[in-house]
Each structure stands twice: as C-alpha cells, then as structure tokens.
Length: 314
Image 1 (cartoon, rainbow, N blue to C red):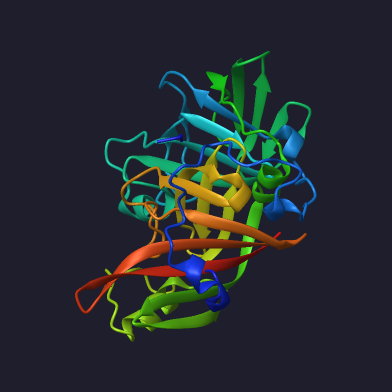
Image 2 (image 1 turned 90 degrees about the vertical axis):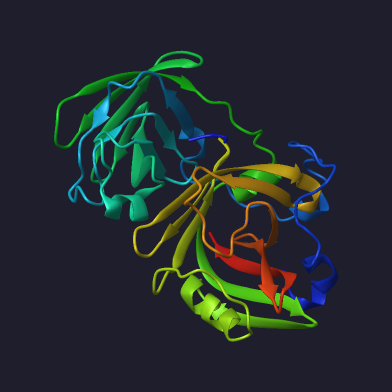
C-alpha cells in the first residue's frame, strides 16, 4: 500500500502558486518552533497502537465480506492500524476477475481495500465486523494471526514499516478527519470563489461547469466524508457511497505546511485532486484543519489553477 491534498481570497497570492515545494525535503522544517505548528492537537485515541505491516507471500486469502460485490475475497498484502482507530486491510483480488462494483467502490482495478473501526488490547486488534488480528514478534519481523468472524484462522508473516517522527506537525495531521465545508476558487481573468457545505464533488463540478470549466463525468452525489493521514505515510479519502481513494503522502516543506501525495492506482482520486499539484495544511484551532488541494483546469483553451480548501474537523 506504499509508498508508490483553498486558500481564501485574502491569500490569493499564495493560492495560485503550486503547493509542492521546489527545494523542500521530506522532513523539512523545524519542530516545536514552527510558526505553522503553534496550534497543538491532542494525540489521537490509538496513536500508540498504530502500525503498518507489509505481508510477504501470497497464500493468505481473506474471505468475502457480507456483500461479495463490495467486499470480495483478497490476498492479504497489507495491514495497517491507524492513529485514530481505523484499520485497513488490502491486497489484490483473490479471484481472476474482480467484480465491477468492487473496482469502483473498494479500491483500484488491481487492489481492494477494506476499512474498519478497531479497538486494541495489547497486541490484539479487534476490527468491527471483521474479527481479530494479532501481531506477534520483535523488531521488524512479525507474525499476524487473523481470525475472521467467518472462515478459518490464518497466519501471515510480515515486516513492520517505518513511521514518520511524532513531531507536532505530524501528530496534528495524522488522524481521521471529517469534512465540514469546502471552498472552491479559480482565477479566470478575475477570481471566482464559492463555499459549499460538506464536500459534494458532483455539486462543485456542476458549479465550475457553469463557469465554462468542463470535467469528465463523475458519479452523481459523489460526497467526501472523511480524509485520513497516518504516520506510516498513508493518505486516504472515503466517500458516502463506500468508495475509497488510497494513496501515500510526505512533507515537502513542513514549516510551511506543504505536502506531496500520490495515488495507489491510476483510477483513484477525483477530478479536483491532482497529485502533481500537491497540498497545503494549516491548523486554525485545536480541533480543525484546512487542507488545500488543487488541480489544473482548462477554460477557453487556457490552463488555470483551481483550488479546493477543505475544512476538516477532528
């Protein structure tokens, strides 16, 4: 699952500059004294239990979920317990042909992901609606014991992946966020902007289409519900229809809040999230985050930068 997100019009000068830093480094910026990181959020509920394991071999098959079209069987390749009580299991489809519905809702054309709420006791992770995963071992090499609610007990060998340092900026960002509002803006000769409740991608695209900017078709009522970052470098977006966009992220200029991200498959992401543009994060309070993502759009044959600022709530 490795490792292969608007600013207001007041900040319009910054808004139309690419987010990704040209000279930044993955661990750029300071820690305690960063101006952008003066707001310090509390540590998420399961931060100390967070782990990502890359599974070796291809003989551990996770059975279908309640709806095989949405939760088909998969060959386990990754298990991650995030800092904020979300567990991810992922791998290629176990069947030769992947269900079309699963392709659209559960991951890319080659991988499927399932996300569960979890609790943890010691080294035993209980995934709601799935079963338990126990992690045993010292150092990087571990053994997973998987006990699905339906099906036989399974064993898998794996390697624990490294995590980003737990400084203020990273701890602030790495959690599961809900989306409360979105502002979209683009400068078409003059700057235009519009605020939306939540983040309905279809609604935003319809607004931009009315301004003469056209996109490929998307599902009706495509709503972003949550955005998550983890210290293992995972970045994912979940949708109201059950869809998941899974990718990875890193700091490019931590002191300025600049990040780079990429998707795990060519069919992931939505028309307003261009990974080549990068993203910008800010923390206006101890319970919120501004995540600015951008994409390049065409209007009257010319290219412009459209910026989407998500207001995220912890």
